Amino acid sequence: MNERMLRRARFTLVLVFGIMAVAGSRSVQGVFVTLRTLGLPPVISPPDNPITPAKVALGRKLFFDKRLSSDNSISCATCHDPGYGFSDPHPVSVGIKGRRGERNSHTVLNIAFMEPLMWDGRVTTLEEQSMLPFLSPSEFDLPPEQAVIKLRRQGYSDLFQQAFGEDVTANNLAKALAAYQRSLVAGDSPFDRYLFQKDITAISPEARRGFNVFLEAKCDACHIIMTPGLHPFALKHVVFTDGKFHNLGVGVDKGNKDPGRYDVTRESEDWGRFRTPTLRNVALTAPYFHDGSAKTLADVIELYDKGGNANRNLDPTLRPLKLSAQQKQDLVRFLESLTSSGVAEFSREADLANKE
Figure (tube, rainbow, N blue to C red):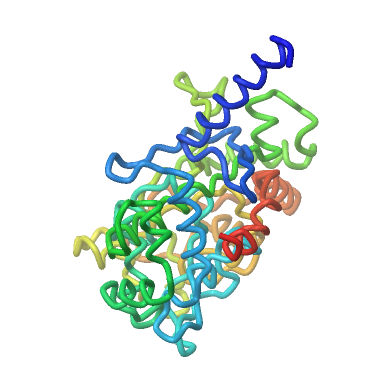
């Protein structure tokens, strides 16, 4: 091997292990593949749960394992299906014994950048969130202490020893699931290449017009995008959410009384408010809204176009948009351009989980 090849090999090793340190890679049969991160900020792990390949591999195996539920019928992937952008194609999630939940499941793609979590913001970390399905009668219905015993009996002890240096505990079960979810980053959409690489051919003329509609309608007030040229402190990344809670009046016209954020704060002004979801990969994650009541992106746009549904806490920023049919179509094309070019890679996740 000549000196040039040696330097390149050394650089490759440094690059691979550097990527691993921030969850920018994923193990595929022993080979680490760089994820599509254009347009996304760095993944930051909490100090007490630094991400490692062993934790990600363990978390992946757990994520797809139906034995985490009390009757072995569902897994995390049941409600966060890679085939639907790690979301749920049902209006509300269906747990063990066909028990229906109350809300639609968020995608976990790019969840590393979301805070707080859940529609009502009841938890702030992925470690906390990972325990909620175990405690819910309509999800896993398996108390964490029982899950620990079950996993030890199913032969997980060695994998936990490798990842954490100790046997299965509820704490490191949560950490493994959280580490895996932090690895699910999906940027590098056509729009990212258009915005950050100035590639005007990356998106269609219809999508470019739709982006203008998005800005003119002030959709970016909640689905934040610090656009270069339009904002003095433009970012080099976009997560398309303000992380706050808003009332659109979803479901009030049909008698849906979901209190939303009020369940957590008990503040009257929070009644009917729900966390702003990210728009990244939104074309994959139908149906939409907390109750899954909008079947298509066109349905979502119709609600915004009429200014939401009137109620006592309707967000004051909502107003009728009076978009034309063409503007609505262009807006859909723009939203479709937010799909990561690497989403097809996630179809292999279940197979990888079975091999680990």
